Length: 209
Image (cartoon, rainbow, N blue to C red):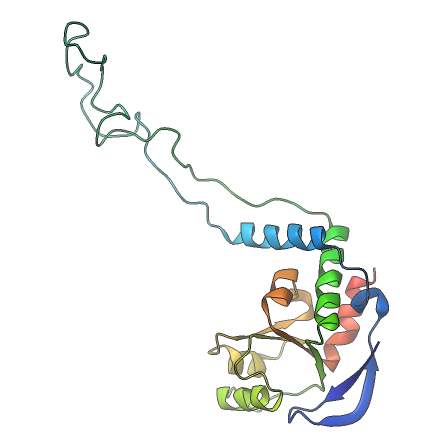
């Protein structure tokens, strides 16, 4: 698959790059994508929820009324879940929601996500660029030139570029990652995927294994 390379002004450079069909043109596996996204979201959960059960609630252990003769149900403690202020029955406890997926499945999910973006024509290749200093205005100008000002976008860099990252950090709709940080959720969560030329080799090398 050949894709035209644009500059930061949104104009064609006259060059093209060839994207590997084994990464950007496979048969998407929707179930692999589902599992990878599910794992990503599960890993974001803190799992610190907690409700007190009857053994943990503060209250008297005195039997609140006699066992028989009242005409109502038996009751032994004010901490019983049936009373207001009592414990919670089977309440949530702190736990981890994370689970494991094998590397091949996660690799398949990322390739499927990249293929989906390519099939939808929501994938753009831009020549490598940088800024002398962190400047949000410069990054906004790049978004305007690429027609992404009002769209969710994901920029993938070949190597860490502090100035580009800091320039984009204040923009909620834009995200900047390196090839090693690329994940299925981030790809699908963005309306447009912008790959810098320097990232292509790393992406194709990581996912062709």
